[in-house]
Structures are given as C-alpha cells and as structure tokens.
Length: 134
Image (tube, rainbow, N blue to C red; front, top):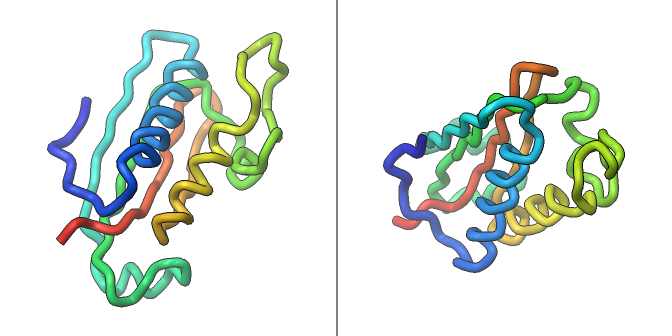
C-alpha cells in the first residue's frame, strides 16, 4: 500500500534505486506474503533541528517504509547500513550486503537521513528524510 506520496527534490535515478532497494529487501526478507506500506509526513522546523544533517533552509519530508518481514534485533539497527555487513548468510538470504549502504549514500547525497527500527518476527520500518519539492 502506498500513500499519495509527495514530490521530493532529488536525482530521479538515485531515488528510484533507493525505493527499489528498500522494497526489494522487504520482499526478500519476508517468510510470509509480504505487506509493504509507504507513508509520509512533512517535517516541522522543530523536527529538523534535531537532525544535524538537514539543511536549515530546506523543507523536508519523512518517508516510512514499513513491512511485515523477519525483522532484526535493535542492536543491529546501525550495523545493517555498513557495507558487506550481513545479518544472515548468503545461503539463507541472497544479496551482496551493499544495498542499504547504497541507500545511505543516496540519502546523504540528497542532504537527508536514514534509520531503521525493527522487531524480530514482526517487521521493520525504514525512516527516510529527504528534501521536499516546494
């Protein structure tokens, strides 16, 4: 399910790659029929203050990619963004270990931020903040 998403300021091919990586991970790391939801909200100026990576003169949108996948322990929430850091062997789940690192680089290239929250067996939510097209 996708909300009526806002227009964001960015390089189209990179934003496509970002969305593609997040959605394909939601499908790959799921042991039941996948349910993927993408929601958003505009960030208020006071929300932007708490994130030093954001440019103070730009408007931002927060995108939430939520799934019902296998999830992961909270202690791995930062590790998953490090290149070649995998939580599962390639025999169990295919992949190279670079997808979320690419997502991080794309988001940083757009002066945004990315983070993840999850619970094993429940699913994950990836929180992406990107400039909004005004």
